[in-house]
Length: 378
Image (cartoon, rainbow, N blue to C red):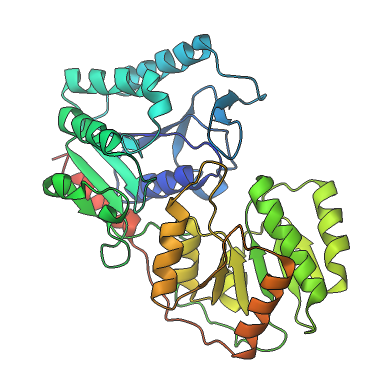
């Protein structure tokens, strides 16, 4: 049995990546379960994966300065204890052969109150422990990196980096990566949309092809939607702009964006056929989180990306954006420089140049992760 622990705070990328790997484990005949500590999501795509839900918490704001419960109240010591107890109870009942912690110890230090007791129990029971981490993490101080190394040495058997060393090496964000090379393995990027095939027939990009805007929910996404809708209104081209406003946008937001964009703008919630829309669009406009990079690589869509920096100077998306820009794969627009006028100009520049689609890439990180995890079950 393999047990995954994952905690998402703002977006849902951490959870979706974990579920995709868990799903791949099931498809290979492995027993797997997941413990999630974030706000529950619609699990339709991964409905076969059993998820144990801890009392959910989330980030209070874009700076990740504090965490709150589902109702927005500050997390209390009683809630922390309840979560820690429940996590240990689940671990005791399942008795996994392998425990996988997503991101920790490279992040999620705020959750040491529950992760450390879990790691100590795993060590006492002789459970193999693996860290599952994306290709880029938040840049930290030398002291913080040393603390991460110490935890890896004490408790972990392997680190699975879900990336490609040729695309974005882990040491670009974690400077001491060389110290863990003997136990580190690159799996390749993990695709959370297993239903999309790179063999899907692509529609030729022409004057009717859309500008597709997607940035998820929350305040950061709203800034992009507002700028994009105004840019659509400014554009002299008849090309439609489709804005996907997140999983459950409010009527207020939909009405506001529609009014700003006028007749050329199409306003919708997220769609299950997003990959197909992306494979047919003229230009994609989005942030540049992990799953977005996979979406762009899998579909070959030309793109403008706006890295999320948040209120605390997040570095992860900027690192990916710079790498994609350096290989001529995207145009980058910073949050600070974002405006309707600049966005309109960039879209015009790119569409006037009749951009060709890029060759598409299959991202097999989930299957490669299964291969690595299997070895700990032998």
